[in-house]
Image (tube, rainbow, N blue to C red; front, top):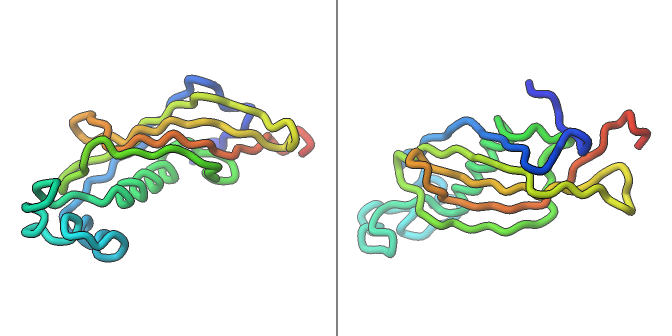
Length: 152
């Protein structure tokens, strides 16, 4: 287990890389049926005549995999990854057989003025496939706690 990160441990430019996750067609269709039931996420034949030209993972599936990768092997933020807002985009589709990983960089560290026990960090997370193409870009503000020994 990695040592937990508190506000005092995080700095601008700090980078993190997760493990990987390989997607299967079955996994893409199952997620699509459950959470984003559009033909290009659920039916390989129908997907051929879609904008994507084939079965593609839902962006929300990509986001869920990104979150899992971050929790399993990304920055070990004390208290968990608690989002306070962000900007999300999907510049390229995710296909069956793609192997995803997340590369993150701390862009900003801001101690709270009104709540001294915490702060915010801005984290840029690029989810990339095996070709090193960015398939998801997520810039998020995360709540982060100060170390308990600081008296908070």
